Image 1 (cartoon, rainbow, N blue to C red):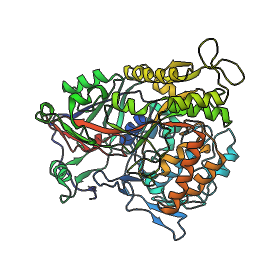
Image 2 (image 1 turned 90 degrees about the horizontal axis):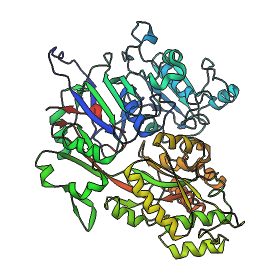
Image 3 (image 1 turned 90 degrees about the vertical axis):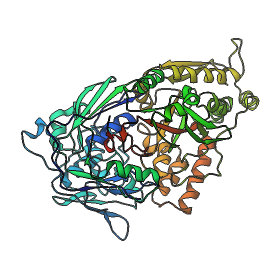
Length: 585
């Protein structure tokens, strides 16, 4: 059922009302809060609360549904599927900021024109630069004209323009069926040009949007505090009351309340699982996930069916809430296809990557580390996402004897040092990026066993997660673990991860295949259906052959909330759900 938040007259807040504070935590550091400069889940979670996309996701509806956000309705689409017209609501204002010089600044269609063009600005170097550059009429030419310099934002182009103060028009070269999904995520937010001009290269530290919150404090890698945007429009929660039992409960808790209810959101960075869990148990955190080592202590699971689990009585009886489901995600280990050791498409390099994949026992880590709360990835597009093929098997099976035989066949002989050498006789080691946490060390133990099985030397290079992201974008690594959670529930959000045009952005493997790229470019013009599915199958066969990824697992999401949290329901596409919650201690 659709979940709506509507305009309405609200009673004034009582002056003496106690401030409502939500305490949450990230298990890795954020990278900044400029929507054009980030692509990580932690920064995106904050951005979702500061800025407004044109469209948004229905909070309750499953399957996930796209609904208007700052627009009066869903966009009008031309008969040829190339032109989208959006009508913005009037009276939406940015949070106060010195850049506005004391004036109240209204959101207009021009702000989205600026934000979309900015993704293609060479000086911004956006990890999302592929989103629109080659798709909107005239935008690629404008970007090429800029060269390495700043984009000329004042040059009008047909592809992205205003028809009037509140009307935005996007015109594409080819159909873009997944556009509504993309516009509901955290990719395209309304930004004010004068704010970016005021803060320049420091825009990551000065986000100013029209969303329900504003950034009050940022201690990078340590603490983030959001407070209410005093200029935020007045809305109320109004959820349908005829959904399932869970949705009816949320409707009874939230309907009629002002949106949002939380006054302040305090985010701590707690990288180790045990301290985060202790903070939740003690009531210091209002939301948390279940640490993998404690799954069996927290959940009562069906040993024959990992899909079934419930909280153990000691937590359930205290009122702790569990929202659970298989994640719309894939996890994988990327081989840097530009690395001199593991990269390239020669037969010996492909053999090395396949051997490494066959030497790692994913079922073992699902059992021991994930505590059976995961399933094997077999397809680039995961279950519950449009385009998934449940019958496809792309992952290489665990088979160390075959892995060793493959390395022998392609000239990786064992030297006097006990390790395999390259076919040219030179010694080598796999450069493996990893993090500093206890769970990272546990994964490294299993990876060490895998490399020992095939007598390949590995060097674990430890660095913080945000540093790993930079190394990935610069293609300066050998192997690295990665995960991608759905920004929107469509296969295009996942197949783009291996598109050559996204190297330096979301393509962690630095993989470029003319065959894959051609099929991807065809697939993104098609709606979900059999024709696109056939292309996806071909793309998965190419990836299975070239092996830029070792497919890992898809985790079950076990989200917990304290008894005093209201409105709690895990959402597969929002990076965080804080603005939909209330706390009543």
